[in-house]
Length: 125
Image 1 (cartoon, rainbow, N blue to C red):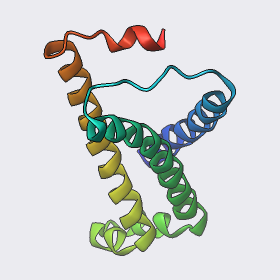
Image 2: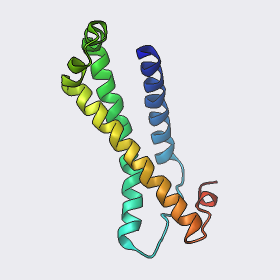
Image 3: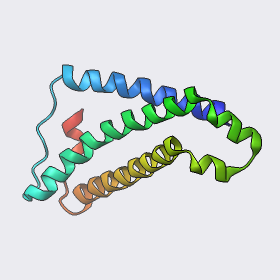
């Protein structure tokens, strides 16, 4: 299971690097205007924070992988030892924050489709 996690984590890191490169090389659609400055800024920060967190979660995963401590913890079978690793604590915290941002993003998309009747996907196609 750990090997699969490392494989998917590596793919996420590679895709994040690729997407970040394309983000700065291609023309971006204008930011969505909702009529609320707070919501507009929240949407922009949500998008940028995704990138920051994906890079940070990848970096902590690499640190954990190269320190080698995860193998000791997995072989001991003591899950409490894994949670005590500071790098892993940050890795888990960032994973939680990514999930929280994803939920906020989905809520925003649903809000635009249901309440304001906007097809926001047209902007990115």
